[in-house]
Image 1 (spheres, one colour):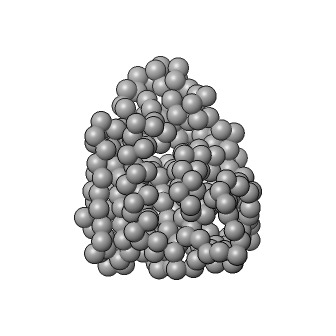
Image 2: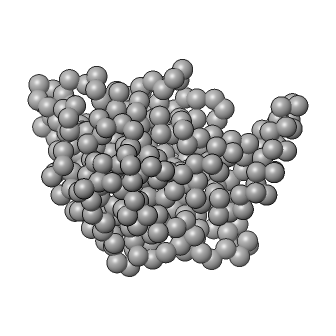
Length: 304
């Protein structure tokens, strides 16, 4: 397997990505390609790239795992911005990039998104029909999560912060999750998703300098008005494979996965419920990841 660091443009900046080429790669041939999108707060070096893209490349696919704009090694100012419209545009730009590679079959491009990346992947697939197949793993609708966290008080606080920044105040950087297991314990947080998120992102299990747990607070207004699955019943027609775990947690990916499955217009669609798996088990735990990848490999094999 050959891993290359590449960049492709989005508006006025470049998006950083890892392009993986399968063993025995022959540039004179045509290959199916899969874009792999990381969770919110994550980066290309974590689950989407190091687990799912790696394994799919072993199955013979060209894969492209990228850092979201404004995050990781990608460009875009301001930093640490989680902007849904820009994250959806990242996918379109990723497809643009694949279309410039002579060895990529333009009619065999798929997308795989994990967690919030799955929600964004679904949204992008609705309006970019160069994407021929969509797979999601514990897909989460970021807008729904934000709205359920107290939308109206948050909007008031966002307005005050934006006004302060317009008048010269420093940007407020907050965190997605507690910054350490000790901080989480002190806060008394016991929900399975939060516990596992801290273990995944803030310990040697998967900690990365490109995933620093920083979020620009004043940029959250757009997320509160975003619905990743809006118009899925009208525009999402491509084959769809949804993977969820049956252990529910605060992030709600189990119900989001079912909502996406039920709303999608796709004539060919399937949902796999991995028994005993929580949200983060499907990031990197072999017992559960293997089940997801077995299903996804068959799905992409049939549809790309």
